[in-house]
Image (cartoon, rainbow, N blue to C red; front, side, top):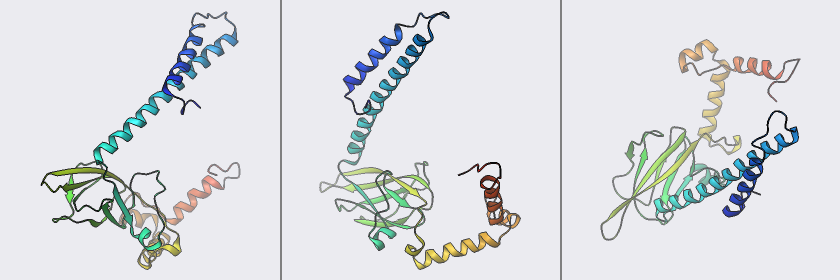
Length: 234
């Protein structure tokens, strides 16, 4: 497994592959096809080995940088759904996953009281201060999908203040119908009703050009998945 191999071994394998390929660099049009194939495979293997070394090294540096920025302080994000059901939304693949349009509690794992600042929109680098006085936790609703930067300003006992920066990933997270709150379930069914009974023309006029009616979606699905010649989607 090249990805998990030590760096020195990967470099050695890549060097051997390049040496193999160099044996056939002078092949002309009359050279055997087998030799051409060996040269081509040697080059591909060399590139793959160097890529694995580069990727592994970059991953280690990234982890070290994150630990330095947070100075050992871990941000905790707890969603209303997690508090109510005891089930965790994030499987660890996304950094600080939160559910968009749902209350999220922000805090530091250490319990330190801080001032929180949240990016107004993803990527803007413009921040809104959430609290005037230091608190150990605060609720916030993220209304836009994407990666948001969050700052936590911590004041030490000697009066010095340090600012920690974290990244939060806001996503639309589907919840099983029976696990929705009464309010969310009503919002969901009301939206379905509008979707079903609002025409394409009226919907675009009301909600914008990204709107499509139920009739439009059904028609597109039939075109793509119910074609007699071929199912183009499944």
